[in-house]
Length: 162
Image 1 (tube, helix red, strand yellow):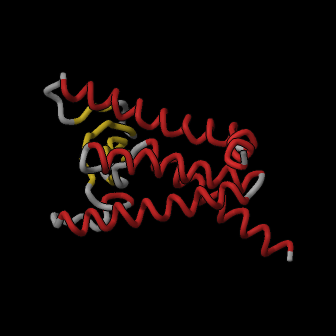
Image 2 (cartoon, rainbow, N blue to C red):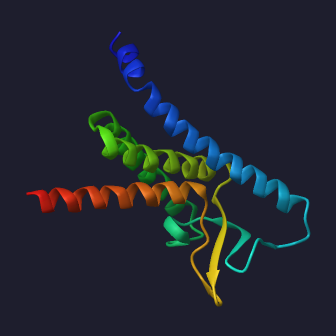
């Protein structure tokens, strides 16, 4: 009975989380489909944006990439634990803070799914300006980053208020 009440209370929140997950997975599916039928390694959208498929075995922005499967599995387990803590924070928070945690967890589950299903995260968005390339990332990373920045802004305003 308690679980049913919890689900009803947070249905729209988890629908939002699932929407982020779905958007991320659909974008990855479309990119994988395109590159599986194309001889191109990079699809140039414009001078600022291109699609460049990479398989990321590391953490955020390809950092900490190792060939060691044990280390990879430990990182995946750690990310899973962090995601469940973030879900707990979703259940305990409200408003913009809750929305931020939902963005982080929706993106996080998208990337964890990749790690479990593909053995690495699919990254493909390549932003560049005058030969300076940012780290290649995906839709899940966008939501994780937006969620973290929003939490930082919320905290800055809390500190200023006090």
